[in-house]
Length: 324
Image (cartoon, rainbow, N blue to C red; front, side, top):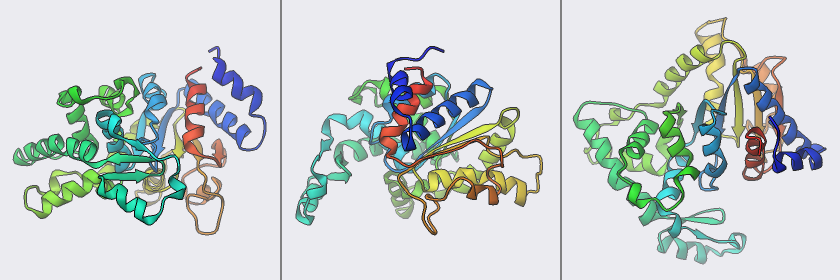
C-alpha cells in the first residue's frame, strides 16, 4: 500500500531513539496484520479524553484492531466527549493552578484531567439518566451483561443521538458498537459509571450481579483467545500501563500454567507506548523481555517499547498503519 504524507514524514525524519522505535513498532504492527494476525489495543490513562477516537475510530472501521482492553474511564469518556464536547474547558496553564483554583473548578462541576476539564452535569449526569434505565430494565428482567455491552445498548438505541456534539465518526465507541467489537473492561468499578452503579446497589435499586464481573471478563477472554490465536496469532499493542494492559496479557500464562493447556501460543507481537521508564518494581516500566519469564511473550515475539507520550505516538502509528 502506498503511504501518504504523514507516513512519509515519519519514515524520513524519525531515524533514531524513540522516534526510530515508533517507526519500527508501526512497521511491525502492519506486518503482523498483513500476515493474517489479529491485534489487541489496550487503553490506559485518559486516552478517550485526549480524543484518541479521531484516529482509533478509523482503525476500528478498517479492521486494524480486533479487540480492545480499556479502563472504565476510557469506555465512558469517549461517550462523554461525544455528548458534552462544547461544555469541556481546556486549561493550558494547568501546571500553575493553586489548590484554591482547583477547588473553584470543583465548585463549577469541572473535573480536571491534565489540561481538560470534564463537565460533570453535562457529561456524567446526561449519560447516567439513560444508562440507569438500561441497567434497571436488565435487572428487572433478570438479565446480566458486561459494562461495555450496556454502553453498546445505549449507543445502538439512538437515545442520545440528538445530544451528539462532535462528528460521530470521531467516536471510537460508536465505531466499536457498530462492529460489536469485543471489549474487555477490567476494574470497571473504579470508573464514574462504576461508582454510580455501586450507588444504586447500595440503595437497593440494583443487584450487583446485574453487571458481569472481571472474573467473567477473564473467562470470556480465554475463550476468545483460544478461538483467535491460531496462525499468525494475536498481537498486543499497549498504550500506557496499568490494569488495561496488565489484565489481558495475563490470559496466556493463566491458560498455559493454571489450566495446563500447553498448546496456547504466546502473544505474537508486543509494543508498549509509555513514559514509564525502566525502574525497580515498576510493572509498567518493565522491559518486554521480563514478560518472557512470566510466560506472556516468547523468545521470538517481536517486541517494541516507545518511551514517549502516547497521545503523540499513537496517532502517528495509527496514521502509518492507515497509510496516511
